[in-house]
Amino acid sequence: MSVVVVGSFVQDHCWSTERFPVIGETRVGRFSTGPGGKGFNQAVACHRQGVDTLFVGALGDDALALVARNFAHSEGLKSHWQVSAERPTATSSIVIDGEGRNLIVVDLAANQTLTAAFASEAIGSATRIVLTQCETPLAVAHAVAGRAKEIGALMVLNPAPMHEPLTPELLALIDVLTPNETEFAALMDGIGQRIDPAGVAQRNDLDLHALARTLGVPTVVITLGAAGVFVSHGRNRRGDADAYYRVAPAAVNAIDTTGAGDAFSGALVAALAFAPEAPFADAVRHANLAAGLACERLGTATAMVDRAAVLSRS
Image (cartoon, rainbow, N blue to C red; front, side, top):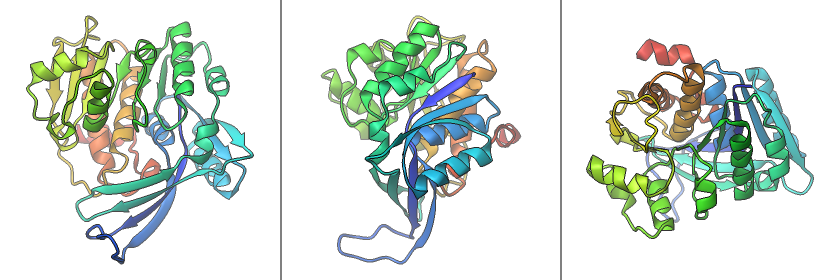
């Protein structure tokens, strides 16, 4: 298996409306539902890039679990599910306005029952890259990162959402970290450095690089939405000429930004699996475009783009 993605499955319930309702207001909108969850989105994004991918996650014993299984089967995505008898399959409520912005509430439900043992045991010794996030217990992230270190696989953590501080012990096991501005500010706060998330993209590159280096992670990739992507390397530049740099945002017509970060992380590990010897910047540019193209579609897992779509716009 080239890539193993450990993480969450969530059935998304989405309403689109021209503007967000104010408190107490009812708005008329359009409803859709589909598969999501940060882990599952990222696995679909990686798989659609043509990379051999395994998704490891948890479901309830209910009708929505069948929806998840059927979608994975229809995609040809290999999946390994832990089933919870106590918690239902996770669900979310997403409201999207006319500018593509979103408001989200999620019940992580069965995802919170995923065990460290189940997740780490699913990672075979031939795995080249492991990707996980924070919609499952942090003990799971610790376990899969330890397993990646044991087998010599590249360990990528998308620290989303930041429910609790990440420990130095966990960060020490990570090779590549992919926060957005809010998550990066939360990571800084966890080590005693207060910064304004709204001002991350406006910081000068040398300052941002210095902040990223305090995390102790070899490579930090900060996704900045409409401001593009910032990359900071330690001593290992992964084939790049520069220790830090920015990649401009992709020129796209965004209608729904909900799964953009997931599209980026999934496509990033896919690009790294395809060309492990190529400059890291090549993978970042590929992932940046994949994320932008996903924003041209409604939905989350269903909005992830394939490799041909990215190459056609490169």
